[in-house]
Image 1: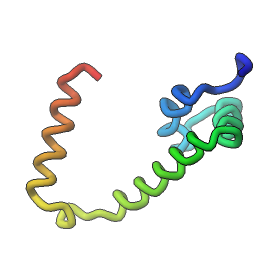
Image 2 (image 1 turned 90 degrees about the horizontal axis):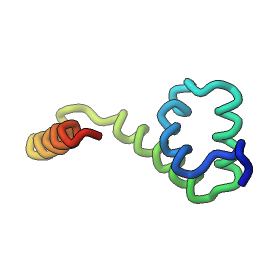
Image 3 (image 1 turned 180 degrees about the vertical axis):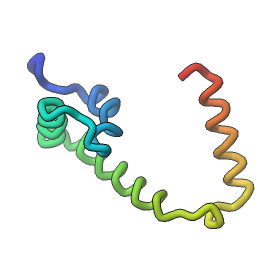
Image 4 (image 1 turned 90 degrees about the vertical axis):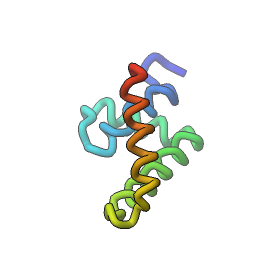
Length: 83
């Protein structure tokens, strides 16, 4: 690995910016070069695309009330944990 190559951890940290087209051109090129050589990260990005598409199609009424409450609690706990 060269100093210019992205690590898997760095790719995961940049995936949201990648999807939002917010990466500078050089950083996007590093991201895509990593995807071209790393099957694991390529699979991860594809899974994220599928998740975004599926979740984006959900309506509030599609999620049972108990599941909504559970998800909200997880997010509250996560925010309170300092992450």
